[in-house]
Image (cartoon, rainbow, N blue to C red):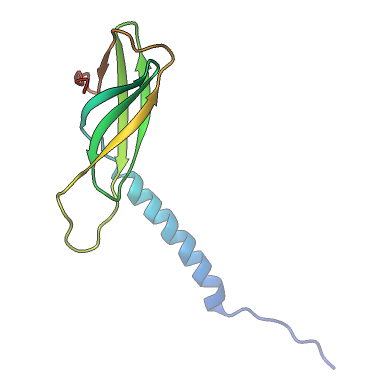
Length: 122
């Protein structure tokens, strides 16, 4: 009796490779669409925690990417990764509150967006 050699089908090898290539391409395209949403206002949660309010697409992923504290201001940077929508989309945006932890009490410091525009306390 001879031994049989197992041979993989070319499809079984190429499908995982194609999936990895597609995932990398989607990741590259996705990172090029990161946007900075406009912040609306902020609320004081605790002396060392604020919540900034932004309006973004319902299926987007939004996060605080930076907090710069000085004796007079707290500058917050927010980025959102919009989700790709198949077909016609909607212009409606959802309000989201993002919590921001501070190193010191907010006190009398003002809160600003990444562009240096003061946010109102609500």
